[in-house]
Picture 1 (spheres, chains in turn purple, brown):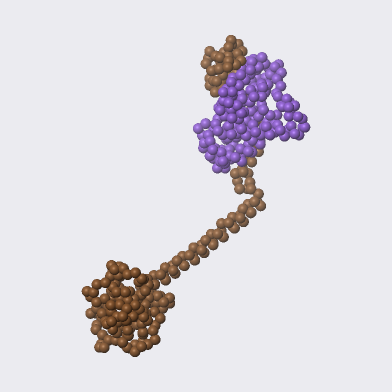
Picture 2: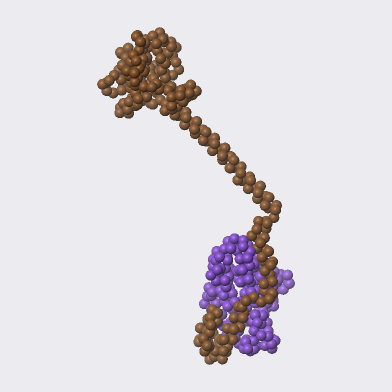
Length: 183
Length: 264
């Protein structure tokens, strides 16, 4: 998070300052990419499309850092959904079957145990959760969005988001303990 | 909703506060269960700084930003089209607006000058020029102005229906009032003859009939407000000299139409 200097950075980026825009990019891109790695197999491409849309809409954006992140992750989710639809059309696979393929598989616990606590291993562990659990964890914890923003993005109530986040964290802790990732 | 019991704990209600702290990335209390600390460390690593390769797309995104931020991001054809459209839409109307404004200003000035000339408020030489060019009233003689002002006062005190400021002879009618005679009779007018010897021309505003002065006229300084050849009290509207062709503009009261008519 940029913090107090976000408004100035955003204003500079909106005025065409490439350095300021790079500052925004470096601040958000890791969380964005990790979130997309959880919800789509085409994370890099979707991240690129997301930033292109951000570039187009940046001059018209108004709001603080929270709003900026919520806006950006909303765009990313829409692009991920679009990518899933186009992928399903290309492969001529029924949508139900495609969604089944998109469901992440539980990683091999022995394999995970061999890795240290790294971002990649944690992302892989979170991908083993149900889709809505994984997405809410990523939006709440990684993206740092409030429950209300997450609720708007995923189409749930803030209360449901909170309950789902707690449930997902408990399952994640259970998975990590069984996989030995947290040792 | 109690939710799942946390691993290693008997129930799930007590860990919700700790889970909220993990989500908010706050430090857990030291006496929190070890699985909670493990989960917090794991998520902290997930929210950590960028790893190698995660910022690989920065160059492409910055290039896209530069294209969007600079005018070069627009194709040259679109820029040329925009310039042409801008020329058509902005410069021409500006030129036309300037011309129109000039024409309107000149028209307003001309109209105002003509109006000023017909209301006889211009300076003497200018009024004379207007008299020659646009048939405006002749410039007043030196003493006429103050006399006409007094006539205006008299008329405003007793308004008469039917008389208009443009009728011309009204001021002279006021001049012709004998001293001490109250009220202003409504005169009739007839063309004023000109060309008689001993007479001086009168303008449109003057409707009194000048009379031949039998002797050399008195000095103008005796009556600074009236022309020296005027005898307003004896104005009858009928020339006493030989008749001549009437001029276009002057009108005089007809005899018998007013209180002075019978005094010819």
